[in-house]
Length: 374
Image (tube, rainbow, N blue to C red):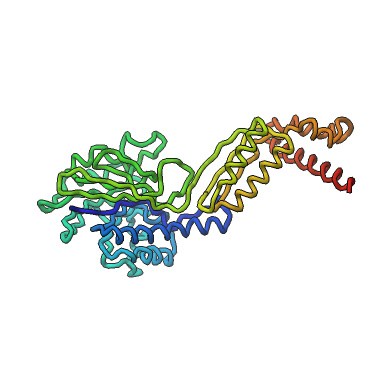
């Protein structure tokens, strides 16, 4: 039996500019941590090899220190690794891979083929047909060469590639780096290990995307896994197990507030956030001042509990109720300004400014009344 781990899209060196500096640093560090977990998992499960299907690095311009740290993170597994270049770290003449070789930091047990060919692992009866990308975008199917690549009789044949399986991914996915959906059959592959799509996805029994092992975007396509693959013999159907490896859970909530109860329900959900949560929150609708304050307190508390929170309440329109208007004074200059600001909340580019001004006016008036009472 041949037993290996399939992983991809580590994106080492990725930056997270939309987050606060401390949160961004922790999310970037998580990408090194998950490589260490994969190495530990490979050792614990006694696999024969680890196959990495491209986009090991997020950019060609990562620092030398980052390159060294990546290979140091892999040290927990002493067996063979086979990793290929993807579209983010293509095997150009001058690339992150050429720098890694110049630095001398690629261990002897790590195989990095820079051209299409076979990595023959005789000791474990495994032939890896590797198709590293040599440019970021191509409209040719680089796995077509697998059809004519010969391997020793009796070897388990596994393809390793990075790209988009034609007709099997959402229409919005880039059409570059295409891969034929029946490549495994054409090339007599026992398994085709793919990277590029960041979610765990089965194309057919012999063809899988592992997805990124640590979630890195707000897309619910089942990231955060590696695949444990067992093949009894050449020609056998692979037994594939999804193994969770991700630390952080990325979620995107689109909420609409119409009643105070909606805000209270959202506040209860926000109270359940934990340190492993990375949350993007978009709130639409309308609320009175008390409801808005309740929601803002819940957002502030969640921001303290979660790893990262990106809240957007600009779509939540403030609609003062009778109690709010009573504090302002239903008539007079302040009341007129409040009415004008309330109307301006529906006026395109001015809406966000008007909404914030109305909130400030209500809070100022409330604080003034409270101060006078003391």
